[in-house]
Amino acid sequence: MEGIKFDNLALRTLPIDPVEENYVRSVSGACFSKVKPTPVKKPKLVAYSADALKLIDVDEDALKEEKQLAQVFSGNVLLPGMDPAAHCYCGHQFGYFSGQLGDGATMYLGEVINKNNERWELQFKGAGKTPYSRTADGRKVLRSSIREFLCSEAMYYLGIPTTRAGTCVTSDDYVIRDIFYDGNAKQERCTIITRIAQTFIRFGSFEIFKTLDPMTGRKGPSFGRNDILKTLLNYVVSTFYPEIESKYGSDDENKYAAFFEEVVKRTASLVAQWQCVGWCHGVLNTDNMSIVGVTIDYGPYGFMDRYDPGFICNGSDDSGRYSYKQQPPICKWNCGKLAEAIAPFLPIQRSREILTKFDEEYERVYMNKMRQKFGLIRKQLESDKELFDTFLNTMENTGADFTNSFRALSLIHLPNTKDFDQSIQLFTSTILDQCCDAEEWKFVNKSAIDERTYELLKSLAGTNRALLSQFGFSPELLENENLKREKAKELANMTNESKRIDDEKAWRKFLDMYIERLKIELVKDDVEKSNSERIKIMKQNNPRMVLRNYLAQRAIEQAEQGDYSEVRKLFEELKHPYTGGDRDTIQLAKPDETATGAEALPSTTDTTQKHATGACLKPTIYESKAPSSACRIRVT
Figure 1: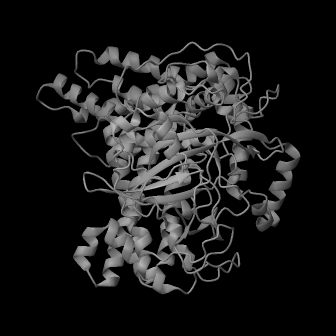
Figure 2 (figure 1 turned 90 degrees about the vertical axis):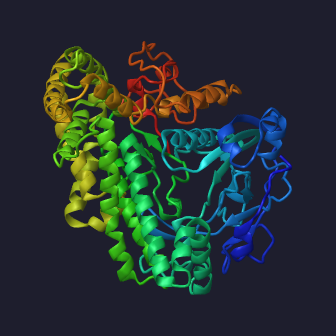
Figure 3 (figure 1 turned 135 degrees about the vertical axis):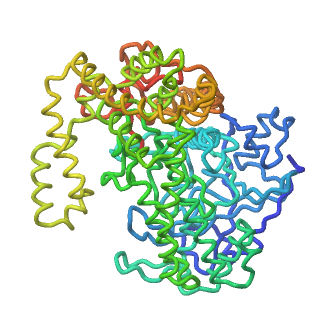
């Protein structure tokens, strides 16, 4: 690995903090602070991605040396040319400006120019304290590191723009973590992952220049330093948008306008792709938004199991600000905050006009992707949106699995093909098996708020909405709670048999609509050939598997016992999300034990409390829908 070529352009171009001591402080007039990784005891390699490490020219011989990999990618040994630094940035967190944040647990190591003359930034996450660690220890743990390693690579293999993860290295050092903020702290292993991207500059990088925020009373640590803002803008445009730099040169306003438009379009395209695979980020603050339009910072993310547009993957997001359905408008809102940050050099009126293109780009990417997922490859109709919405509504109303329901669409053949009737029967039986049972349906539609608290919150909604928001609620959330209560009454007498009858009626209605649309796809040439081409495209756009929370949790629990085999096996499966057999059923053992891993709560007889049972640990078929107990897994 000594032959890896570093060229640390960011540190040569952007201002560096003159203070060399590593202590928590406000950093003014700088974009980076020099730091050093804190060594760990007995580093051990949990997993690595050969494809990601190729980006920084780590060759096959080096991959055979696991001890060497562990030493280098834990931060215990620095390669020649590495120059660790922590990046200073701010952010709007849950809608409020939080002031200085920065790389509190991550650090820039340098930029590699690989054999293909590509520039890739290398970064550690969890390697120790920096000036931006605030009250934290700069460490990450095995649980969260495995989740980030697996999902970074899973998104890449799904074809979604993302940062990459090269390695996951754990150690014999420990830190204390209170996972659910409930006073039940535990010791967890210090773990470091290697992250790779074109850049980790984010929207929040431009917010260090922000003037006093009227709502929070905070300001950026470098407010008023428009000279540094311009340097940062020019660095980002010239390095990561060279075609824009080449076209506009010294015509700054038009150059920054073109740059902002490209960021808006990339962000809109990115979130459209998230929506199409049922993925939820969980913490879409401005400091978690990449300036080059890739998925960044994997925390309490989640792929949906049962389709729910109100899906909240982050157990700390009480208000549902970052729920699945809110992701597109939130990403647009974040682009608006970026516009405000660069307003000294791009008039806000002009950037607001550009921002209107977000919706157009989102709709274009979303509709194109959905047509591929539905196998509508010959014609584009305005009525397609109604078909897609009907499918989503049917999934929602039957509690159907998101990933497997989309994959099941490829079972349906075009009308007039020889196997059409049989394919309809196969789809019907398959899709009904993807619907949740009556017990799970009652659980997910049960209100989590007791009657007394609910009445109090309703009263506040009518008299003091500001106070209501301080409790983490909104009138919209209360309305959702009311709908849940009404739904729970309707479901009181539901049985598995009655639910399956209702589900079949709902799916028959969708099928009628879909078949009529497929008739428009028919052409005069070989219908069997057209059908095969269509199914191939559908399978290339509807994954057979995704990184479900319960799959990640099972791998984590084994890893916490020192067995990394399931992390590695799951990773290998995630490398081929669109290919392989479609196995839709699984025999689950009855829950007879309680998971003790990081995402699990203690066992309880109260099914309203979120917990993971041993059923989450049994499945070995990665394509299966999640067991019903998976809906109780909580990630913060």
